[in-house]
Length: 478
Image (cartoon, rainbow, N blue to C red; front, side, top):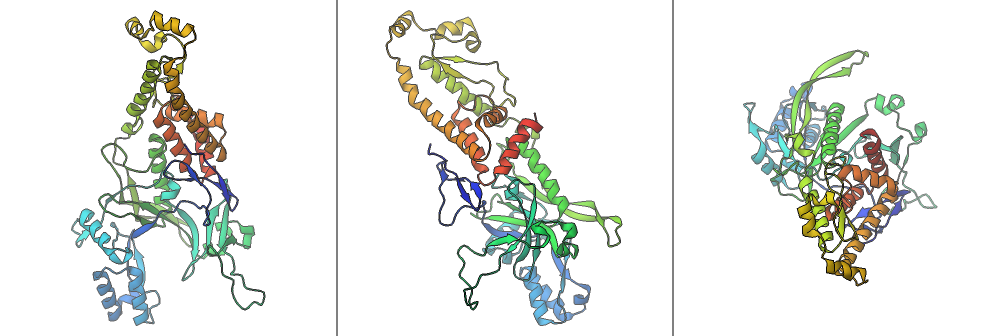
């Protein structure tokens, strides 16, 4: 296994995994948080004409023609504003029980048609609508598949947005740095890599909604989006679904956390061997809000619902057979090579993923615990001749065969421990974490080492998140 290198970009230590399992060195463009390309947008609702716009026959005609043509609501709104200058904001959002899929929201409009053909239903509400559809998430960290922020938009760009510190404890307010000019102040300087970001000068750069004039004026709001693939829709890029609902995002985080805990930290891919996906739908619920007079009221809203239609008990030990098989294969190889195995009782692992941890030890016979009976012990006992040969100091062929394999495993472990240390988790603590997650035999099995490497690599740009996950496993869920 290639060595793992760590680097620093803007003061952030990051690891960049590549297909070989090694970690890439810095490039001219540096390293940044993982970005998943988006190939289309599904919208959570619709926009309808305002009461004033409804009074305009021209506005009604433009709106009807735009909806029929599959245009985006932003496009329809601009056309109405151009043709009817007196209507500055002719459309208003409307909460509905279905999702909107329009060709103009996709670089390839054919994808929108495919989604509707495959998953739209006619529930007697005016034609086929997208009420529920399957999704598969492309990453295991929920922050990557449901990014969110407090943000203030201008007509063309983000003006202010929230961003957490490396340790996840402090929320800052960021903005774009002013474009620099040359010494004469006559022309701007070309910027390599895009505009730089800086802390907002007000409030010492901290994001504090209660004292933020933009937030209080409802110009700064929470916004997030789900990023996913849709089974059956052939696209190398993912799709996204935006939401401004705190309740929907909080409920999704709870489900991501639950499923991830049961699947060893994984939320990506299908949920089980039957290729069960997540589903996104809507549910009518009553949510509380504070009105302009400070009184708590409850209103009914259709909120995005994340479903996981799977028997959750089947997720608790999804790879037990594979991991146990690899561990036992290691036992068999060690015994055939002339060593013996020290084994602990089955089920000694904290999570039961690998219930037998085998360790090859030089010696003439197997322990009775690993053999499971005198008949099996006799079958594996070395002959008197082989014992005399070893006593005479003759080299054991099995040792020669196992040496390269053991060396490769040691190199892999060294790389894994090094990567964990680069993320701020020392070797002993990571070993305790891994033992609890996958059983004490994870270091012996090739699949166990691979899983540990994937675990570390998935947090390559989130050292604080990795440290928190290890702490939670060892201290919170102990």
